[in-house]
Image (cartoon, rainbow, N blue to C red):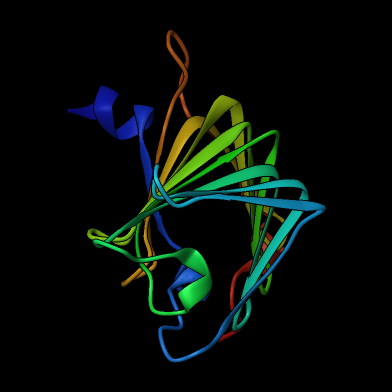
Length: 162
Protein backbone atom coordinates (compact mmCIF):
# COMPACT_ATOMS: atom_id res chain seq x y z
CA UNK A 1 0.00 0.00 0.00
CA UNK A 2 2.76 2.47 0.86
CA UNK A 3 4.49 1.68 -2.44
CA UNK A 4 1.43 2.53 -4.47
CA UNK A 5 0.94 5.74 -2.52
CA UNK A 6 4.47 6.76 -3.43
CA UNK A 7 4.10 5.58 -7.02
CA UNK A 8 1.01 7.65 -7.85
CA UNK A 9 -0.12 11.15 -7.02
CA UNK A 10 -3.62 12.59 -7.13
CA UNK A 11 -4.36 16.29 -7.13
CA UNK A 12 -7.14 18.71 -8.07
CA UNK A 13 -6.90 20.72 -11.26
CA UNK A 14 -10.11 22.66 -10.79
CA UNK A 15 -8.94 25.34 -13.21
CA UNK A 16 -8.99 22.73 -15.97
CA UNK A 17 -12.62 21.73 -15.52
CA UNK A 18 -14.65 22.19 -18.72
CA UNK A 19 -16.66 25.33 -19.36
CA UNK A 20 -19.53 23.74 -21.28
CA UNK A 21 -21.32 27.07 -21.61
CA UNK A 22 -18.34 28.81 -23.23
CA UNK A 23 -17.56 28.77 -26.97
CA UNK A 24 -14.52 26.87 -28.27
CA UNK A 25 -12.06 28.73 -30.48
CA UNK A 26 -9.65 26.66 -32.61
CA UNK A 27 -6.73 28.02 -34.64
CA UNK A 28 -4.19 26.12 -36.76
CA UNK A 29 -2.01 26.57 -39.84
CA UNK A 30 -4.10 24.05 -41.79
CA UNK A 31 -7.41 22.21 -41.57
CA UNK A 32 -8.36 19.12 -43.56
CA UNK A 33 -11.86 17.70 -43.15
CA UNK A 34 -12.54 14.10 -44.15
CA UNK A 35 -16.32 13.71 -43.73
CA UNK A 36 -16.27 10.12 -45.02
CA UNK A 37 -13.86 9.22 -42.18
CA UNK A 38 -15.67 11.56 -39.75
CA UNK A 39 -12.35 13.26 -38.93
CA UNK A 40 -10.94 16.76 -38.97
CA UNK A 41 -7.15 17.20 -39.05
CA UNK A 42 -5.74 20.43 -37.62
CA UNK A 43 -2.00 20.81 -38.25
CA UNK A 44 0.62 23.38 -37.37
CA UNK A 45 0.52 25.57 -34.27
CA UNK A 46 -2.84 24.26 -33.08
CA UNK A 47 -4.41 26.40 -30.36
CA UNK A 48 -7.73 25.61 -28.67
CA UNK A 49 -9.30 28.02 -26.17
CA UNK A 50 -12.40 27.50 -24.06
CA UNK A 51 -12.97 29.86 -21.15
CA UNK A 52 -9.79 30.03 -19.06
CA UNK A 53 -8.33 26.83 -20.55
CA UNK A 54 -5.87 26.88 -23.47
CA UNK A 55 -4.49 23.81 -25.23
CA UNK A 56 -1.63 23.88 -27.75
CA UNK A 57 -0.20 21.11 -29.93
CA UNK A 58 1.51 20.54 -33.27
CA UNK A 59 -1.37 18.36 -34.53
CA UNK A 60 -4.95 17.67 -33.48
CA UNK A 61 -7.34 15.09 -34.91
CA UNK A 62 -11.03 15.42 -34.08
CA UNK A 63 -13.18 12.30 -34.50
CA UNK A 64 -16.91 12.99 -34.66
CA UNK A 65 -20.14 11.01 -34.70
CA UNK A 66 -23.46 11.21 -36.50
CA UNK A 67 -24.81 10.21 -39.87
CA UNK A 68 -24.41 13.01 -42.37
CA UNK A 69 -22.73 15.31 -39.84
CA UNK A 70 -19.80 17.53 -40.65
CA UNK A 71 -17.42 19.40 -38.39
CA UNK A 72 -18.31 22.59 -40.29
CA UNK A 73 -22.02 22.34 -39.40
CA UNK A 74 -21.46 23.54 -35.83
CA UNK A 75 -23.66 20.83 -34.32
CA UNK A 76 -21.18 17.99 -34.64
CA UNK A 77 -21.01 15.49 -31.81
CA UNK A 78 -17.30 15.08 -31.03
CA UNK A 79 -16.26 11.59 -29.95
CA UNK A 80 -12.51 11.92 -29.34
CA UNK A 81 -9.69 14.39 -29.82
CA UNK A 82 -6.10 13.25 -30.34
CA UNK A 83 -3.18 15.64 -29.85
CA UNK A 84 0.42 15.10 -30.97
CA UNK A 85 3.74 16.91 -31.33
CA UNK A 86 4.11 18.33 -27.81
CA UNK A 87 0.94 19.18 -25.95
CA UNK A 88 0.57 22.12 -23.55
CA UNK A 89 -2.52 22.54 -21.39
CA UNK A 90 -2.86 25.77 -19.38
CA UNK A 91 -5.46 27.19 -17.06
CA UNK A 92 -4.64 29.91 -14.54
CA UNK A 93 -1.52 28.88 -12.63
CA UNK A 94 -1.85 25.24 -13.70
CA UNK A 95 0.15 23.93 -16.67
CA UNK A 96 0.70 20.46 -18.08
CA UNK A 97 3.11 19.40 -20.83
CA UNK A 98 3.35 16.00 -22.59
CA UNK A 99 4.24 14.33 -25.90
CA UNK A 100 0.64 13.46 -26.77
CA UNK A 101 -2.88 13.66 -25.44
CA UNK A 102 -6.32 12.13 -25.89
CA UNK A 103 -9.65 13.66 -24.88
CA UNK A 104 -12.71 11.37 -24.69
CA UNK A 105 -15.94 13.36 -24.76
CA UNK A 106 -18.23 10.66 -23.32
CA UNK A 107 -16.24 10.39 -20.09
CA UNK A 108 -14.82 13.94 -20.32
CA UNK A 109 -11.41 12.46 -19.58
CA UNK A 110 -8.18 14.02 -20.79
CA UNK A 111 -5.07 11.81 -20.76
CA UNK A 112 -1.58 13.19 -21.35
CA UNK A 113 1.29 10.76 -21.93
CA UNK A 114 4.95 10.85 -22.90
CA UNK A 115 8.52 10.26 -21.87
CA UNK A 116 7.89 12.86 -19.21
CA UNK A 117 4.62 14.55 -18.30
CA UNK A 118 5.11 17.70 -16.26
CA UNK A 119 2.31 19.27 -14.26
CA UNK A 120 2.89 22.56 -12.49
CA UNK A 121 0.60 24.44 -10.17
CA UNK A 122 2.32 27.75 -9.52
CA UNK A 123 5.76 26.88 -8.08
CA UNK A 124 4.79 23.24 -7.34
CA UNK A 125 5.93 20.71 -9.96
CA UNK A 126 4.80 17.09 -10.50
CA UNK A 127 6.51 14.67 -12.95
CA UNK A 128 5.44 11.28 -14.28
CA UNK A 129 4.55 9.63 -17.60
CA UNK A 130 0.73 9.71 -17.61
CA UNK A 131 -1.63 12.40 -16.37
CA UNK A 132 -5.36 11.63 -16.31
CA UNK A 133 -7.69 14.59 -15.71
CA UNK A 134 -11.44 14.20 -15.15
CA UNK A 135 -12.52 17.47 -16.76
CA UNK A 136 -15.94 17.57 -15.05
CA UNK A 137 -14.41 17.67 -11.57
CA UNK A 138 -10.80 18.73 -12.16
CA UNK A 139 -9.58 15.59 -10.36
CA UNK A 140 -6.17 14.50 -11.67
CA UNK A 141 -4.01 11.40 -11.29
CA UNK A 142 -0.33 11.24 -12.20
CA UNK A 143 1.21 7.82 -12.91
CA UNK A 144 4.98 7.19 -12.93
CA UNK A 145 7.14 6.04 -15.80
CA UNK A 146 8.09 2.37 -15.90
CA UNK A 147 10.68 1.58 -13.23
CA UNK A 148 10.44 5.03 -11.60
CA UNK A 149 8.26 6.90 -9.16
CA UNK A 150 6.29 10.12 -9.41
CA UNK A 151 8.44 13.12 -8.56
CA UNK A 152 6.99 16.09 -6.72
CA UNK A 153 8.60 19.42 -5.82
CA UNK A 154 6.48 21.44 -3.38
CA UNK A 155 7.26 25.04 -2.48
CA UNK A 156 6.25 25.67 1.15
CA UNK A 157 5.70 29.36 0.28
CA UNK A 158 2.84 28.31 -2.04
CA UNK A 159 0.73 27.14 0.93
CA UNK A 160 -2.31 29.41 1.43
CA UNK A 161 -1.88 31.81 4.34
CA UNK A 162 -4.05 31.21 7.40
